[in-house]
Figure 1 (spheres, one colour):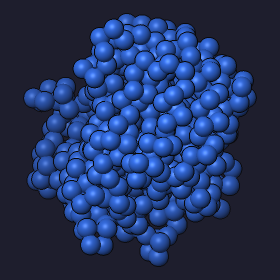
Figure 2 (cartoon, rainbow, N blue to C red):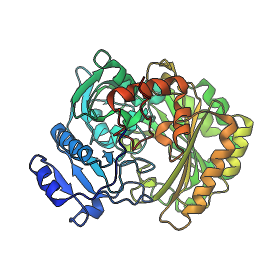
Figure 3 (cartoon, rainbow, N blue to C red):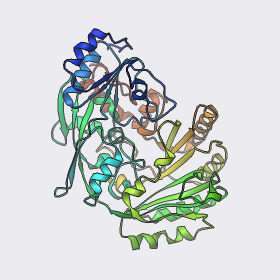
Length: 469
């Protein structure tokens, strides 16, 4: 296998590329380069040798050939939300898909064809015109491509499953520069792999999705208690969700109350715990089911109300803006046991940043009814996903907050039932293998060998190609 190198891009080489590349090319020193190398996670600071803003598949192929022909490391970026910054290469070539935003919705067949540069909010806006949606994420400026390839958890997953469970086909550029289609009948092994295997197998430039009826009004939003109520609330919540219908997806979030308009000023900065609910069925049925939660203890704020799905999807955007310093750790657990609840309530008192928050996503429902071996995504039967987010405005205090996240994650280890690859950071090869399990990992490695034997696409939660023979 030829290891890629980080190279200096020669001006003569760039002149050759510009003759065949229709998009914009940015290198160090060019106007806009410093802005172009920024990604969502402000703690990532890398200087690519070249950023190639692609307009179509032909540009993707030319940028890929340019990089591999010079032994340059390849990074692929759509929304730039990769937690560990894998959409940037130090000194290599960034193949940027952010300008590829064609989006076609067919309300009659309830399908959508979506290019890789589309963001979640853009997809929601286009589909909700027809009362349709793809289950996808919780922050609207997330890129659809990376979220989908890792699985795609979000507010509709218990009703309709993961984002990949709506995926019917992809168009992609392989490491060899070939445009291929993958679906259930054509390149079916590759189609299996991209549904949860991340960006290991090529550059997906277009997705085809099945759409689902949603809203446009949903019963959604947070109900908030003081942090001191955390353990008691989590025990109630554990019992309450045991009867959850598929229409309901929830997350428990511990944080300091944000200083935003819809939160009363007296709560700004106060340690709180909230249950964020999204009921995607009949509103009156949702009100009846949520009533016991509203009555539990003494909530200090109740913002769970009928609202447009698009508004709810954007509710948490202010908590995760571009440029903050983010560090994430994650584990799945089957059950919120008393021990898990007690250590969660304890660690919730230890973070210091006013920007840190950690959601615990409720799983189950439609997500769990897809066969474990039907897609590369693993851990469908896990009950909850902990997404432990350490967040600071700048580098100040970041090391301390990161140490808190790592400590919490370590204490959860005895209770782990799996891991979501989109929430991994820099854990390394063994953690990636564990996230898929031995059988799936070996199958993925074999597919990788067939489509990317030189591991060109390794800036991801990497699955190296299986050895030949």
